[in-house]
Amino acid sequence: MQPLVAAAAEEFMAANPKVDIQVQAGGSGTGLSQVAEGSVQIGNSDVFAEEKEGIPADQLIDHKLAVVGITAAVNPKVGIKDIKKEDLIKVFTGKITNWKELGGKDQKIVLVNRPDSSGTRAVFNKFALDNATPAEGITEDSSNTVKKIINETDGAVGYLAFSYFTDDSVTPLAIDGVEPKAENVQSGKFPVWAYEHSYTKGEATGLAKAFLDYMMSDDIQSKLLQEQGYLPVTKMKVERDAKGNQKNL
Amino acid sequence: MEKLAPARERLVKSNKNWMGGEMRGKILVFTCAVIMISATISITIFLGTKGLQSFIKNGVNLIDFITSTHWNPTNQANPEYGVLPFIFGSFAVTFLSALIAAPLGIGAAIFMTEIAPSWGRKILQPVIELLVGIPSVVYGFIGLSVLVPFIRGHVGGLGFSLLAGMIVLAIMILPTITSIATDAISSLPNNLREGSYALGATRWQTIRKVLIPAALPSLLTAIVLGMARAFGEALAVQMVIGNVRDLPSSLLDASATLTTIITLNMGHTTYGSVENNTLWSMGLILLVMSFAFILLIRYLSARRKL
Image: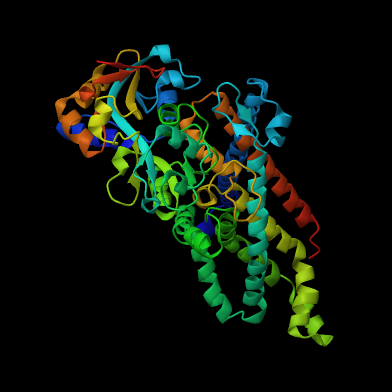
């Protein structure tokens, strides 16, 4: 979520010239570790603090800023646009190894994974694969690299946030007939999504509070957020807790 | 004017200057040395304590850690921490890249010093300096954009492979090997060459039978230094090797190295967690290996006869 926060911080600083906000990039664990030890005021993460080992989640206060939808993406030549969840699990666990078994081209399936500890991988495993352990495959961290590999490799399948489906270079898959679209995530029909969290140690105060309020303002939620490919948290009709239980609002 | 001053004054003055300059210089270089040494020692201590924590505090079995091929740190019910595939991957790309780069580098060094010392050196020297200057992320990106599709299309497999990693690394360590080998051969005393020619040897015989054996310890040092660099390289390798945690069974299989697993996972793990600690342990293995490389270099230099 670094690009989103960086863009928001830039606008916030333009509106408040005396303020200086520094946005650093890191993986899913970096922001949580640093806010827990008090070296930063706000720690951002794409997973719940409760899901990361060694983080005192009870000391941290969660501010859910945005929602990101994630879906499986395939090389366009595979010829599949929709997949059943059970088939998706079979693809990622290596039980189905050729796309023709699913009505696609006669191409070997090539998996593109994320690193074990990646937040995107955790979300995808939990909500798309029902906690099945994915088979071994090429592993890359950066979403842009994953997209490039899927685009260039015949039969490749990986997973990306909705914001990366800006062109035809990869084909996002509908799961059980539900299109990977913002409104389907908001209504709770599309299962694979995650919050973008901002954590503060104790209640947010001063500048940190001002900035978090700014992130929740209409300006950011309905404009900048969507420009960056995220979904506004204010429009969600469902909510989810750290254990993954979903309920209607 | 100076001459008119009493001898005693002149001597005391110059003596004072001499003392001041000498002391200042001494303190300056001594400080530099102390800073360097303490940096090395503190890194070693830090990495040592962090790297051992997964064994002492988290109870990971050291033998399993080094010999098991199952790496599954996020499986909460039954996490497994076996890094053998990554150790194997690190050694495989290191030795294979040295296998390509050593003959090329030493060949280029011989060309530069013996065959065409004037114009050959004029062309090759800037080429080598340029190769050093290219950042490793650029090597990785070229590998990902050119080499990987080429291997996929013309050799087979996915393209992401040990082969791709070893080619990228070979190009990266080529300048190290070439420049040290060049220095080694050109520093050989000229009477070796003259003696050999006087006995009627041809230029090729001189190179093969006299110069290469004489420079051999230095040439081996060049290769080991190149290997040390290859062993520690992370970014470029990560982009082309595929980062698969299985043991590769052929050159065309994707693989992973210690460094690529560390860079892929470090940012996502939280400080103090078991997985984070095991990543530090992999860092400790890298450090131990680089000590081994240094010992090897010291041993080779001690054997140098000239």
